[in-house]
Every structure is written in structure tokens, then in C-alpha cells.
Length: 349
Image (tube, rainbow, N blue to C red):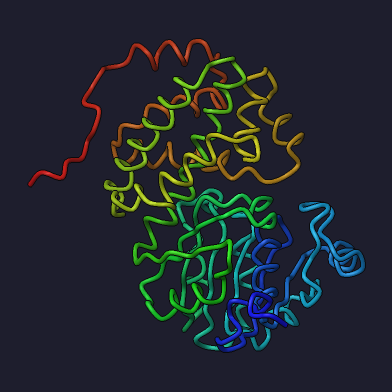
């Protein structure tokens, strides 16, 4: 074996690591971890799908054609997946996140590192995934991973960076080592709330940029939407207690640009289909995977109204998706709104 064949974690301790969730990003992370030489278990709810992944050596539903690492163990037995693990990544859609964590909690050892990979807000409540991890477990070390990371590009070894956020510096350091590879780089942050909130908020704006493209609008429009979306995100972050400066990093503007610029984004594709005249329910069904932004629009609109935060794009998307307002009418209202200052934040004292 040459030096280039040695996993990046070869000089680091070997950990037992579970990835809960059989979707595309959970699978991508599982492949990285297994490739770095760790004891890696991936849990899937569906026993048939878990068995198929093991038999075929790939996740045909979410990442067809991508070989799973031969040392990755895929199972539908949740207890078997998490027992004895020092690190557990949770890549479960927000609507099922609490239920799965609740089931896993009795098996987790005290001090286990729990890392959320889910970019969403709990259905019908304003709870982020890190809140759920803390509420459903006791004595665990909690972090969140978020950034501009399309799973298909991660497994294709495109150069990618992400952010691990936790107030626990040792946790951040460990996750950086566990996930680092020649093509995957992990930065750290201590603003858990900001990083997680950014990951949830950007999904909303991918819907509206998808709509704009469907309507034949050009790059000027996409640039306008992305920039004003960032302003809204930072205003909301400040109002709710997160650090708005977090939003100029990878987890904020980096993920926003990615998600709003590519049809690899499920939320972008939902917006595109709605822009082409499909009903929301039809668009979600056609995508066939969870588009977290749909639920997030409703929750953020309610919270912004409660806090008095000016978020015209969120209000516009909500009007189209849930109030039946025609898209042309919403566009006219947006373009006739008050013209204010461009940049809300200044480096001057």
C-alpha cells in the first residue's frame, strides 16, 4: 500500500460510528466515514432496502450507480446500529427526527457525540434538530453539520467543504478528523443556532429561485433573489438570537448559492414545478423525496410575523404555496414594495 492509499484517518483512533437514515446525504457521509477506516453502521427503516443495499453494494434508490464502501454495514436494526458507538450522525427528515432519536436514546452511552445532518425545522413546532437531540437524550455531546453539500457531488469526489458547529471544541476537532478526506474539508463554528438556522432557511429561497427559472427569468433575477434572501436570513437570525455574521460563511451564503442555483436541489425542483403550473402536492409527489423547505416556509412565516421581522420573499412564497395567490400578482407586489437600503450591516463602529 502506498502512502496515497492510506485513509486520512489512519493515524487517528478508530471509532464506532452510526449514521441514522438511508437518504442520499446520510449515505454519502457513511461512505466517507467507512473509507476513513472506522467501524461504520448505517441504519435504514426499511428492512428490504437495507438488505438490498448490502446485497447490491449500492443505495439504488437515492444514489444509484455509486458503490458503497465494502466495510459499510447497512442494517434495519436500530439498536444494533447505535450500540457501542461513540459518534452518531442523524440524517432523518425533520418530521420523523424526534421519533427516531427517541427510539435510539436508551441504547446510547453517556457522552456519545450526536450530530444532526438534517436541514429543517420540526413539523408544527419551531424546534431545530439540535433542540430535539437535547430534549430526547441526556448527557450527550451535540453538534450540527451543514454546508453547501450535494450528496451526488460528495460521492463523486468533487471538492467540497462543510461546517461542524458545536460549543464543544473537542467534538468539532473529532468530527473534522473523522470526515476529512482529500476532497472533503470540514470547518468549525461555535454558533450552533446560526449554522443550523441557515441550513433550514436557505431551503425556502431555493423554492422561489426554482419558480423564477420556470418562468423564464434570467441570471439577473436569480442574483436579485439570492442577495435579498441573504438579507432576510440575516434579519431573521438577529431577531431570533443567532449571529448574523454566521450567514456570510459556508453554512449561510455558501449553501444558499448552491441550493438556489441547481436542479440537484429538491426544493429548487419543487419551485420549478410549481412555477410551471403544478399544484404543490403534485410537485412534492413527483420529486419523490423530502423537500424540507415546504414545511419551513410555513413555520418561518409564522415566526417572522410573531417577531415583526420584514421577510417579503418568505411572505411571497407562502402566498403562492398556501394561500392560492397567483404568481404574477405576487411578483407585482414584490417589485412595487418599498425600496430601502441595500446593506443592513456595516463594519464601521
